[in-house]
Image (cartoon, rainbow, N blue to C red; front, side):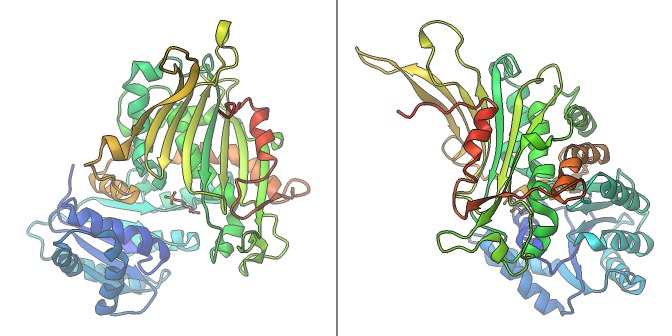
Length: 484
Ligand code: BG6
């Protein structure tokens, strides 16, 4: 269902997220013709500025994302449909003003129907007051109201529950769209298709054939300037509890009854609830130190000098379903590493018998970014009269195979879903709670709430991670192929 007469309100319009993701995605959708007819965009934030200044900023955020020739006219059109209202986040009068502006815009619509999509690109401290303010002053019953909320959704199971409950007092589950932008990434969306549309890939996708799975998130930069936020959250809350666990749930869930949002999320919740809380013994925590001319985490001015906050974590999870019991799922995530990469690496067991005892294991790799790809490492005979078996690849690299396709930005895909009311790629309340339960005990331990807080091991900025990592993954059965 596609709603015309929609106003999209971006709350937190002068913030970082809006600048880097929301406006470029809205513009991307607009220029590709995906926004509904008659759409309007209203930015709302505390910063006082007039419309000219707002447009100037919007244009500077979107100009990088545009490369076609009719860009100038598209930018002009986009400016014409966007406007700005300045106001506080805890002030009814300000929200009434916003509402008046919305009504002015809507009065030009031909029909009475009016739909409002509120995008909360806000710091967590104002989620609740803003939700209250919107419900009280900017709600309409003349159409559909939807609210997109951004993480962090709490800091542990209890605070998540509280936040979910508080938001529900204002907006129903039906109206609430919790974003985890990894669910909008092309390769993550492809996982369901790859898993359930292929006998060749789904056969042997279980504990009988698979030895271990790694889900890896690597970034080549530190917290630079974001240390204040980061130190309160740490790498586990920043990417593991949300992005990586979402990928894990899609990878391990059973086949949904249908591809409807509720059927998919029912299966995800089920598998998440089968994962017991991470054990201390199954963790390796790291913190980067200065190297290669780059500052260490503790040298960031916004970080407390004695912080034990992990900027790297390797955590092994166990999925207690008949399909997966006994298979270690190793989540690895770190800042200030040697490269930017997010991938899933499924390593199969050894060939059991006979002549190929020491041969490399098969691996199925799904690279989420950069450069989406799926490749299967398998062994083949080298061509020629004298030959042997060597590891080779069956390789689906999107850039080659789908050279003419534009891969959408995650935020484009998700905002479009929200406009359509499709919730498949948004996080349901029970899913969120199940995910928090897996990490809450370990997070409390790391914060010293249950005994002495552990000290993360150091690793140099720009390295592959702590030197202990290799032994850690080996412990769970990962075998590196012998170097050729
Ligand atoms: C965000 C985290 O949710 O995801 C950031 O807060 C991280 O720390 C980002 O850099 C990664 O997203 P992407 O799309 O760049 O992989």
